[in-house]
Image (cartoon, rainbow, N blue to C red; front, side, top):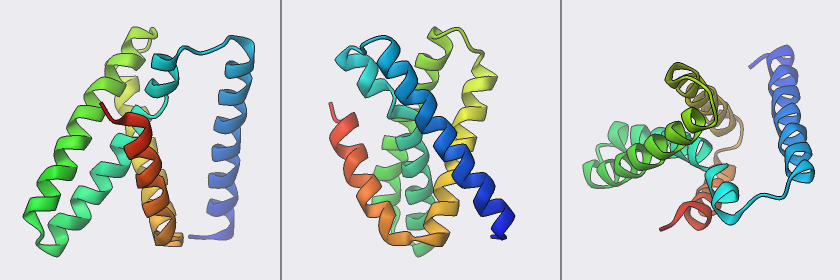
Length: 125
């Protein structure tokens, strides 16, 4: 990844965090809304994890990760559509999260396990 691409990625991540914090300060979020903010990023994570397990030949864990991906992606996309966006836009958001997870994994694979722990905590149930 070039320095320019890294800079763009960091700016995108920071912009997303600032937007999230601003929205959270503007109107208090319900527990359900807080939980919903994790669905697409966590779906992206499990999509990448499933792919890694597939490539390693671990079909059991690949299937489990794929199940989580499917469940979280479906819920996250439904939330985006319920918020007034199109299904295509929801797919774009999911792909952006997947791209970010792949870049993060290439740079710092250890951070993925921390992200996975957060996803497990925030999206269980």
